[in-house]
Length: 357
Image (cartoon, rainbow, N blue to C red; front, side):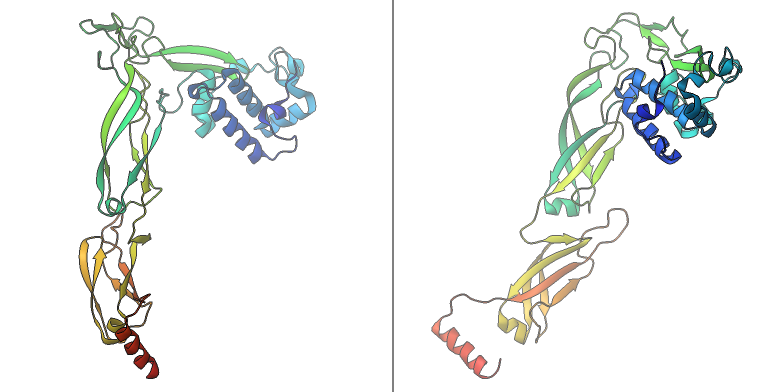
């Protein structure tokens, strides 16, 4: 049956090569079997790209359709005008960064081999403003797949032993030769009987069924660095879901949420705050008590200070997350305006107004 490669990739017939490549990458990741995708759709997507991604093959397809690439097409028993593509070997690494994707289709290990990987986990952790400035240690609980508490992850019932896997002979991989439309592929595939470990339990663990993991609550401490800001994320490598024997755990991403503060706000690594002082202090000068992220402090106000003046306390701001040093604390001074004045205060203000003050 003729196949519509353009429809499979979801691109128009006049799509430029870069659009074809983008569509393939997106669909390949979407349907990749290792990510829970549809294996048949993954194969169809790959087949379509192998044709449309090559200018010569695409021209043949536009002229003759998919028949040009099927067994017996283009005038010969092997296709391609009598040339039998099964007579040559193809190295997956020739496909560059698509090697791992193609590996999923044909069952071989790409560059450096392929390994099952657990899902990543993302959690939110809420900090008080001062904790984001100074850093903190937070306890979190995760309900996830983790190493089996009974067998320690090897899949064997406690008291039993591990034996050499008969399927792969202890190598952890099984080598096969596959003949495809694009050539013969010698593939090294992870042994599915021992999950690539080369060993199998003599008796499977009754708690985890021999897979080496169980779903349970895991408590852990997370060190939050000083200076982190709202919305940033921390990566804890290997703290995600454990896929079991022969696999690599995913990562944990801790998303930081910072509560607002009644006194302070943040701009970059600077702390912003406002202090209200009597009008007389602005006119005559003095010292005002202020709050800083390091605790109580004082601010010297020279005489004649104008309302809205900003004073900079150097190095009293938020630590830089990835380097030494701190930002500044910027304090805005505003006068206190009383809503109700005593008779004596009102008279005093009237005299100042009469003097043009």
